[in-house]
Length: 132
Image 1 (cartoon, one colour):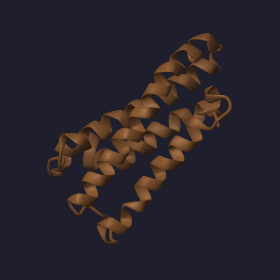
Image 2 (cartoon, helix red, strand yellow):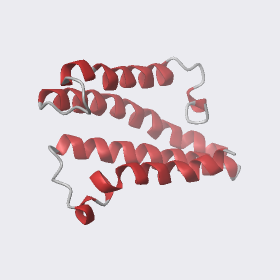
Image 3 (cartoon, rainbow, N blue to C red):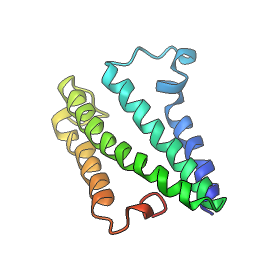
Image 4 (tube, helix red, strand yellow):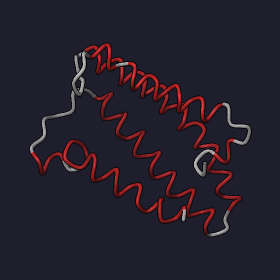
């Protein structure tokens, strides 16, 4: 079951961000507003790749490698929170929003980062983070 989701997840991410990030050159999308937004894309893409890798390792019975890779996952999780907060604040500062006023919308990504950090840091067994 987890392996199927691990396969489906990057497909969903690609479908959602193909036009504006991964394949934007083919769709004539404007340049990203900053290197920070590109860094956000790289960090989040790395998280998806890590998720697929971790699920695949467990499914193959390679739990020791999965656990060792978990150290990188912890570092990447911290980076996600830092880059996510910075990207959200920078987006609000330039008025980027899907509709509501930017400062009001800012609560959404900031809450997302708080929830992500809480899920990771308060988990009594961080190795279960990606497997829920």
